[in-house]
Amino acid sequence: MIEFLAVFIGGGIGSVIRFSISKALPTPEGGFPFATLTANALSCVVLGLAWMYFSQKTGFSPAVRSLIMVGLCGGFSTFSTFSLETLKLIQVGQLLMAIIYIITSVLICVSILLMIYRIFN
Image (tube, rainbow, N blue to C red; front, side, top):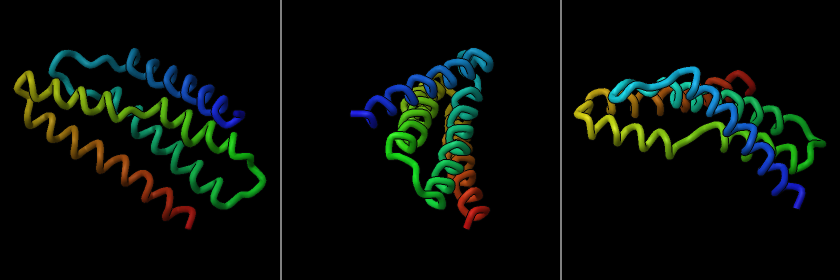
């Protein structure tokens, strides 16, 4: 039950962080969604660092890991928003920008995790 509460709390914190980024970096209709890209990239940094830290350190409860890796990062990053923004770009005729957004998002986020993995291994 503690792990569920930890995920709930972490998810709320991550969602507030993501919402704050979306307010700080608003996206005009048909514009490039920098807020979601930023949130997803930063979430990958947090997830990668937590993944490496928890894989090298013992003694942390599953609740602490779940709070950060599932709750915080799950609430902070957003694949559903990424998908909706991509669809909206396509709907307003910004196919090239949608493709750039997809490629940029995937390359940045996977590269961040790979870089963190290589730094710590």
